Every structure is written in structure tokens, then in C-alpha cells.
Amino acid sequence: MKHRSLHLIRRRIKDQILQLGFTARNSLFECNPHSRDYKTADLCCSLLRGVDFIRRHQREDGALIDFLLPIGSSDGWMTAHVAWVVEEVPELERVRHKAAGYLNWLGNESNGVWGYNTLVGNDCDSTAQALLVLHNAGYKVPSSWVMELAAQQHANGGYSTFRKHKLFPNGWQIPHPDVTLVVVAALRRLGIAPEAQLRATKWIDALDNASELIPYWWSSPAYIYWCSMRTGRHSSKVSKFLSNTLPSATTVPDLAMLTWASLREKGWSNDTLSGVNRLISLQRNDGSWPCSPCLRLTNPAIMAPKVNAPGTIYSGQRRNFSTAHAVAALSFANLCTR
Image (tube, rainbow, N blue to C red; front, side):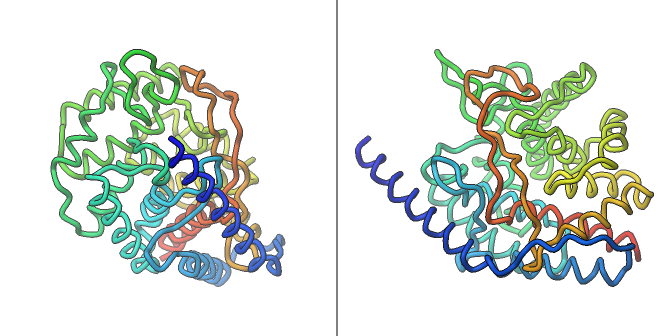
């Protein structure tokens, strides 16, 4: 326990120093919002600047870092998430390849499980996203890794972030829809456990029908509706939410997520055109997008996903998370113009 505490202190100090270094290097790049009409040239230029930012801020070993929680910054989960988000961005193929190499190394070190970082226990969300990235990069994923993930299913069909404690489970160990959607996507892509997929899908559908499709770890419902579209799940309520919410979205990453999801659902429209324009206008001069507070470290006493649950909400100060979502939206918009 003493060794772990010292490791945590060292990790926290190191992350703080790296955070200060990032801030110092980027202090000259001020946010430069402006209003302009949509032009294809603006879209392409904005996209390439965002791509360059991600390239420049990927570590040599392939890791992508963001968020700074009490347990430190995320490398495992964030690397997997960014690589999965930009999976369809051709300009970031090399970034995805390096990210997959880093995730493969982590997986071999931990026998096929991943977490927020090495100080935090492995979780289903990070593991599912890592498996999606590895499969997409052409790695041969051991079936035991995927079956271990499938085996974490709860009786109701959902998947929790962390493995359930047999006697004293907390809110972090109950089924979470924002995690379950990603696990189903991973199982489907790797062709494993169709029965588990079906049970999980039925659970998600029941939540959606009861208007209880609420993320556990995110302060805004934008993430779960983006995740629904990203994992191939369409419903009338998802469509309605996108139509009602995108016109008023003003902050990244919500705006980026909703724009991407709306483009995926219905292509170009007045709403998606406006979303693309607003994304371009919010880009910083260093090519990144600001990240509003969005990731909630939900109080583990909360035993069901709920809107406005108590917990500290964190922004991604290194902006890899928000920039990845913005780049994915602009890349898809660029594809739609062809």
C-alpha cells in the first residue's frame, strides 16, 4: 500500500509537470473564434490543422494523453478512445498504427485488459475500445481476451465499468449504458458471444424505450447519443435528440459529437452545416479545439445513471479528446462534400 501511494504521488507530480509544460508551449496560441460562411477550403484547412495537432501531441511510444484526475492523466483509455474516434480519418492512419502498437504492448503486459491508466484497475470501457483499435489495425487478438470481456456481463445484460464486488458493489460496478454500447460493438466486431450481444442490446433498448438512456460518466447526454450512432445503433429517440439538441450546442466536445452523429444519420442539412461552421469557428490557432468540462468522476454512491449526478467534472486540458472528436466530425463532413 505504501509503495502504491508513493507511485501515485510520483505519477501525480509527473503529470502536473507535463501539464505545465503543455500549457507553456501552447500559451501563445489563443482561441480565435470568428464567424464566417461555410467554404470547402475552410473545412479542409481546419481539418488538416486538427490532424497536425494530434500528430504533434502523440507520444513517441504511441500514447495519447488527456484529462488530469486525482489518479493522474489517462494514457490507456485515452489512447484507445482517440484512435477509435478517428478510425475513419485517413490522414491519421499513422497515428492509429502507433496507438495500436502502444495498446498491444499494454495488453500483453496485463493479459488483455486495459484501464484509465496503470494505477487504476482495468475496466470494460477501456478494454472494449482497445480491442476495437487492435482489431482495426490488423492485430490478431487472442480469443481469451475477448471472452474475458464478454464474461463480465451482468444478469440484466448490461456491462459495468469495473468488475462487480460480490458483497459490497458500488455505483462504479453497476451496469452502465455508455459502457455497454462499446462492449457490444467490440464483441460484434470480433465475432464473439452473440448471446451476450443480444442480451446487452435488449437491455439498452429497454432503457431507451423508458427514456433512461443516460450516461454514467458524462455530464452531458451528447456522449451516449454519439456512442449510439458510433456503434451502429439507431432509434427514433436518438434522431429526435440530435434534431433538438444540435442547433443549440455551443461547446466542444458536445458540438463535435452531435455534428458527427447528425451527419452520420442524415447527411448535410441546415443543422449539420451550422454545426460544421461553428466547429470551424471554435478552432484554436494551434489547430486544437477547447474542451469544456465533460468527464464526470461520478460519486460511487450513485447506484444508477442519472442526469446531474454528483461528482467533479473535468475538462481535457490537453485537448486531444475534444480535437479528436472535432477532426472526426470535419473529416466526415469533408467526405460528404465529395
